[in-house]
Image 1 (cartoon, one colour):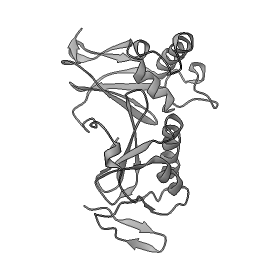
Image 2 (cartoon, rainbow, N blue to C red; image 1 turned 60 degrees about the vertical axis):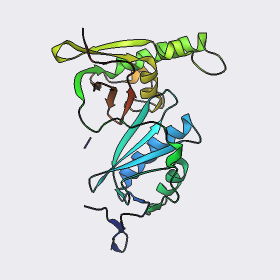
Image 3 (cartoon, rainbow, N blue to C red; image 1 turned 135 degrees about the vertical axis):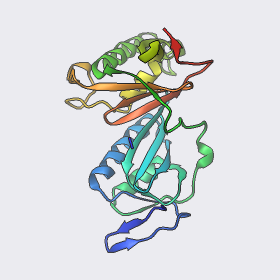
Image 4 (spheres, rainbow, N blue to C red; image 1 turned 180 degrees about the vertical axis):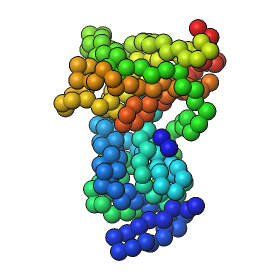
Length: 238
């Protein structure tokens, strides 16, 4: 997904200084995109925070945690008065409904733990049918119901590698179940009907698998999920 930001109000341009924590998403479709993203994040964690980073003068990437030790991101066309800020997802969601620039208020930077993946340097390994990933999530959900406890799926299930993706020069990466769960929980794959089910996914719909030496990323039509790969070099000869 692809000079200081300027916020445009209904009455004309009103420059926003770079030290103002203001978000403006003038396009209704982009407001809806971001609102949908935040709704899914809050469904996973009612106290979710969103970390927003400015990309150039007209794009903003919104990052959230998913509860699967996997990050999720959606990039929208918007204007942000600061380079990087973390705030409550619920307050941003409420502000999007007004259609006006959102005063983000005090930052919650201390609530964000961990680093974000790099913006570039990823190797494209392969494209995987989205239906295959949803089928894996469905099987995992069945196992979680069978073997899970009051705290959710067992870590052994979440950490299990469910897909091996091999790219050029025989580089490969293991995709754990927790990343697949995060992708489907954020509803990043287009589908017919209200529920994400494998038979509702078009066979031609693909998810792109990318990786660096330390990060795995899955790019779907409506957003991406990323997870840090632990121990050594994740890209290894098959």
